[in-house]
Image (cartoon, rainbow, N blue to C red; front, side):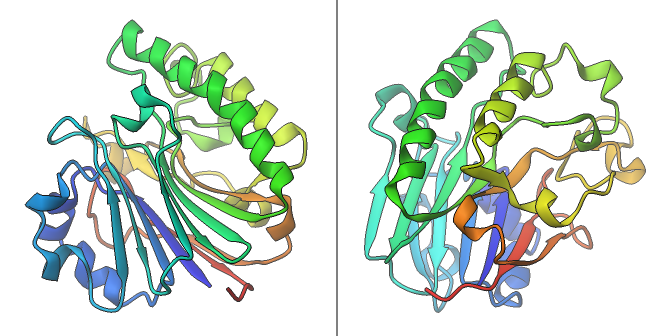
Length: 257
């Protein structure tokens, strides 16, 4: 089973940069997208619902903002749009597809980089999300939560960690939140289970020469339930082409669904 996740930073922009041509070559079972920045009615079906996939979007109410999507080769048994929390759901940040015992989620957590108000909202989301995920881990399902979590967990996960300790995305409180998520052994960072090396990033600022110099952050994850920890075959961050300020994270699992 191959799963791809990408923050597209505008799905129409990613399409113009060749994302869908590349995507069709990957033979992925499920593609999770974040920050689609479009309303579904604005998207031409033949382009933005690729052939051989069932396509699902959860849009933000605000035009040109946020939004998540799932493309699935197999039709889900059930689709869940949103968490049931109005402030989060109005921004189009969560969509879940269920296939038997497997749940695959496309999640886009808020950034707090624009100021104190959005950072406060981010903390509010995190405070609610942790008990939600802890509860879901008791359901006996297999989970893969893909997305832009907007947090670099450890020093190894960003190039300039010393200079970013007071910046959103690497605040001590945010990193501690991921510590708490992983501490119970119910949830795991799939990439780090098989790759402990430095300088593997998924996002680069558009400022300066961040991309060229690989001055990046690893903030896009596939976070899995413990039941899948021995099912990971491979993980790769695709950088040969640039569809967004994020790079696609591709993971293969020894899993039939």
